Every structure is written in C-alpha cells, then in structure tokens.
Image (cartoon, rainbow, N blue to C red; front, side):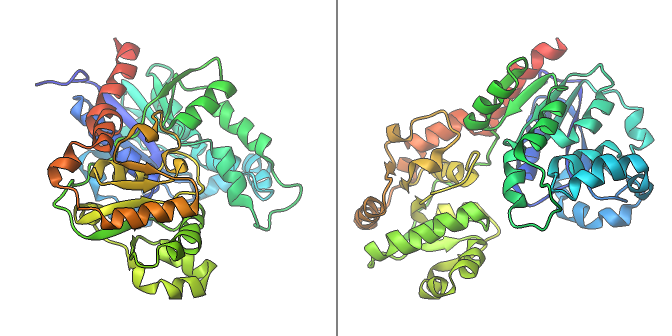
Length: 406
C-alpha cells in the first residue's frame, strides 16, 4: 500500500549530534516520513569550523555513531575553515560569542556551511528542519519553493542561559532577550512551527502569534510490557535536572522506606557521585549503570519510579515508563509538557512530597506483580499509543504536511 507522500522527497535537516534526545527525535522523523511513502534525505549540520563534506575523515566519529542514517541518502555539511577568518564572521559572530551568545555561534557557523552539488541540484517537496540554528541550510534547500517545517526542540534561549552559568565569558554577558531575539528571527522564516511538548507550544504561540504552530509529540519507541519481575527501577541519565531529582529521592525518600531496594539504571550515578560522594557510597549497590537496551529494564521490572523535581520539556523517560504499562509512582513534574491529566491514569500514583512518595513505595513493594495482560491494558499504555507512538506521530505529521503540498 502506497503512502500519501509517495513520490515526494523530504529533506531532514538536523544538528550533527548523536546519543541525545534530538537524535532520537530525528530517527522518529525518518521512520515516519518513510512510512508515509516519502524518499528521505538527511543533512547533518556541524557548528564546528572545517567540517566540510569532502573531509570524510573528520566526520568519522559522527558517521560511526549514527549507522541508522545509512538506510537513506545522507549528507554531512559544515563551514570551511576560511569562513571563520572573514571580517564579517569575526565581528558579527565570534565577538558576540565570546560574550556568551550561544545562539549566534550556532546559526553563524551553520549559515556558512558548504553544500555539495548533490544537494544544491536536488529538488525537495518538504524541508523538515530541527532547531532554529539549522534554518539557514533548510532555507537554502527549500529555495523559496518547498514548505519548511521547523521543530523547535524547547525554547533554546532558556537553555543557553543555563549553559552559560559559571562560564568565563567576556562582559557584558549576552542575555536571554538577545539570544531569544536571534532564535525568533530565524523561526519566523519557517512555514510551520512544530513543538514537541505543550509547554514550548504555549510559549512560542505567545512569542510568535503571527505564525502557524502545531503541537506534535515525538515518536518514542515502545518498550516491552512483560514478562515482569521483582525489580523496582529508576531510569535516569546524567544531566543537572536528573541529578537533582536523584539526590532528592536518595536524601528524602529512600530513608523513609528503608526496607525497599531500588535499582537505578543509567549514567546518573556519575552525577550523584560528583555532587555527593558519601550519598553515592551509601547507595552504591543500587546503581546498576547503563544498559544497551532500555526495554530490558522495563520488561523485567515490577514498578517504575519517576521522582522528578526539576527539568524542562517533555520527559522521554516518563513516556518510556508509560509505554511499559508498569505501575508508576511519580511526581506531577514527571508529566510536564503533556496535555493529559496524570491523576486520571489508574496505574499512576501521583505524589508531591517525600513522605507520600515513600509511603506509596512501601505499599507498592508489597503489592503483587502486574501480569503482561494487565500492563498491555493499562491506562498509561493506552495514553502512550494515543499520543506518543510511531502511528500517532505519523498520523499527526501527515495531517500537518498534506495541505502544504496538495
């Protein structure tokens, strides 16, 4: 059966990143457009000088880390070294950057990317761009003819301010308003702005009321709903928000449930050790490290914990936990960015204080393990299928894009 975009060619423009949330979203986009029948061409954009396409050796680490992109025509582009010595670059890009302007350096480098002839000779029906700073390449590929969809991936100026904390930039330091202005300037040039969570959708609708905005949750790969096991699991990677959440759980919740053992998976262990070595040592046996397949964690678990106290944007680990169909104990913040009421999900115990979390943990530890059938029929699994599955993403993407090329 042919897809509705059969015979169409879609360019997916994205930062040259891997092993991160953006890369997982890009993989979901590739799969969706392919299922919809389109021919997909990916263009990875480097914000580092000298990463031109003909220097294949300099791209080796990236291409090795992204074998999934080999299934389609792929390109890697970047600015030649000569471009960073031009007076315009030094004055308009480098000077603001050494004052902490994270927005200008990314867009400034990518705007100077050298595109191979194979791309400049190509005609695209749709250009799907990820992040505002990749827009200069997206616009060159669109040539003023193809519609440009742009995924915002959170409000980047807000992230840049956080990144700048404690860094030795020259004064005066670039502020939020400056970086936001650059972000919005490039976003205005897209035909449709796509937002991955409800928070950023609401924010950008206020900032750019004249633009068309669409909320489209990313496609998150499903995880197994069984066979089940005895482990109580907490999955978390090493970033500031996750470390803060893990510290809260270990300091405030765990001592109130002393007879319950938890297995903590992911790289967050390093962050906990760096922040509080004594605490890490106390719970050393709980940290299980990283695993290659996250589904294996949920497949053999009894209960999943989401003790989220900080962070912005949609929490992918919360969606994965929902997809597992496991009973969940979670703080309300774990469901940020979702237009759904977590209190309505029957297999979720929602708590907002340490004592309540510990009480729920003690009770759940004594409860029987859910069967595979119970997990498959759970409220969170149904919410996952309706909002965060590949099928849901495909349908939503098609409904947004079809009118643009009809």
